[in-house]
Image 1 (cartoon, rainbow, N blue to C red):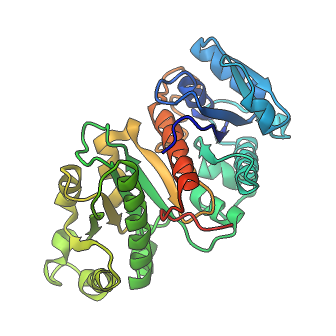
Image 2 (tube, rainbow, N blue to C red):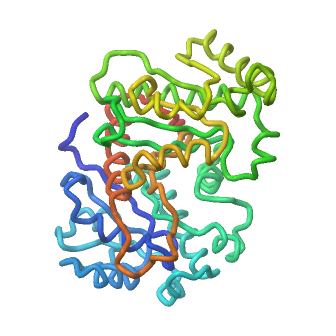
Length: 362
């Protein structure tokens, strides 16, 4: 990858009641983010300046009219392309509100438009509140991932949580990812909606992402993908449930016939340990908490959320709005710094060659 080429990242502010503005401000001077990665915040100047003052940083948020203007800002300036929604400036900390939800939506919408029009190379999103989003009337989406799919006009995406190779708990040179077959839904609906086709498509996205990360790390080998079971002990040959026999194992076998490097279904109580130890590069999880809990225990503050299947590069922090600590100067910005770094790396990878990690052509 060419590390000297300018990469422009649009960073959506998230819900102004949460820790989004703080982690954006806190990550601004991070040594993880290369100098050639230029950032523009999509949000509100007043909110960003409050976050900067809270953290006592030697920075000033300043409005810009275009992405080009943001690229030429001095190092101590935080360029902000403002959303046209002044109500965001008065949102109370730590409380769900329609104003906070609408501000978060507008920021994501504008960031996505900039990426689709190729004015920026990637977007990085700070957290929003799903309840506040719904209070604002945006009830068609349960979260960021589904919203981005609609804004980009794609039928299917998948969420991956990713730990970089520098994470002490991970031994793989390309890091470790967990991709989710089902996402923001109840456990009952998650189980009912599992199909061979959805597992197979998720496994394809996992394989493609792992192949790109291996190539970026200079690793000349095939990816290794572990597919999680649904039930305890992988169903114990049908004693504890038959989803492994009826759905998951046939999906794995179909994937193998298509050339996918899959192993499974594997019991989940040991799968993440095996993956962290270097046996697998990616895990295909069946539902949200199966992947989230295990990976966040390994490295919450280094984890990055990646949306696969979009025509744009999108990463995000791996945590929520954290209303309980919002605007108290307690938020840690490590996940945001990692999300910025990975977004730039994926954008460079995309420009260097035709990637296979799930970015579909516009």
